[in-house]
Length: 223
Image 1 (cartoon, one colour):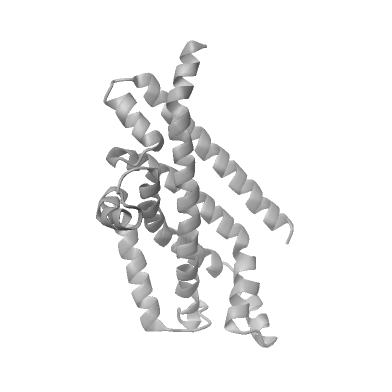
Image 2 (cartoon, rainbow, N blue to C red):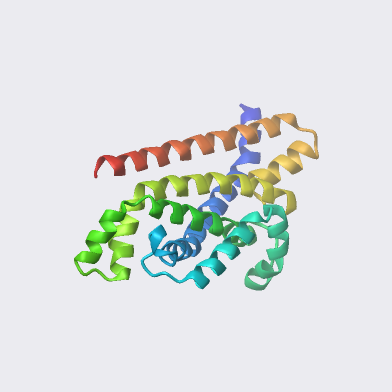
């Protein structure tokens, strides 16, 4: 029992920090990625389903998203540290890590949203146009609701990726379970701490995937 209490004392705070990092960075990455993903779709060519074709804007957005997605997270986090310091006054810790996590995940979210919207039946969009719907109405009344199951699956995948990113952030002062595994597991040669940390992360991923799948399946069944 004493050993379990010791483990709990070590793990509880980093676990809460990881949950905080992942929750807030998911929220902010969706806020950033949603409009970008929608713009990537609606500004594409008419042949690809775009309802407001803007080839130049689409090309610029697409390149920016591709460039940001190509950055390894550790390098991106180091590059964004000055921004974290300007906004929060510090570049280390749980709160400071949320900013690079959000920026790193936003391009991924944008592509997820774009792909989900592309799965919507073009006939539904044409029907909405025939009924006189505006482009904005087509986006929030047709495209997003119809793509919701795929969006849930994509956001679930985003959360899982962010768990991995948050663990990597521990290598450069990000806190959370990654920091615990490095400081106590790796640097102090505590294989038991390493194993516990890995098991917690695996369980967290499994739970999130299960919940995401159930929500998506429920949405599909209600159609």
